[in-house]
Image (cartoon, rainbow, N blue to C red):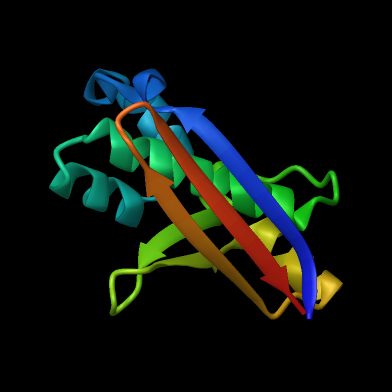
Amino acid sequence: MIFNIGIDVVEVDRFKDMKRFDEFLKRVFTSCELEYIKQKRYNPETIAGYFAAKEAVAKALSTGVVFCFKDIEIQKGKTGCPMVKLYNRAEALCFELGIKNIVVSISHQKSVAVAVAIAEK
């Protein structure tokens, strides 16, 4: 059963030259996400897509509870599809709400990235 849906759209240009903004990247992304971003050579579409996915997941949880961006990790599944791994407050919130799964989809073009997350009970 669907609990909620979250969506986020970001401009890719906001994430150009992100390699220079190392502190921002370290504050927002987990070490696994940073490794993937480095593998993609700091591609702004990749960074924007991952950022949009984190925002979409937060919106799907839509309780007003604040948690760290690093509490939401976007991973690549075996087929290459994005997957969500939660930690700390985000994980505890899902447990409290009875959310069993969160699926996410990411898409991007040169100017925008969009992500949709569905929280399921």
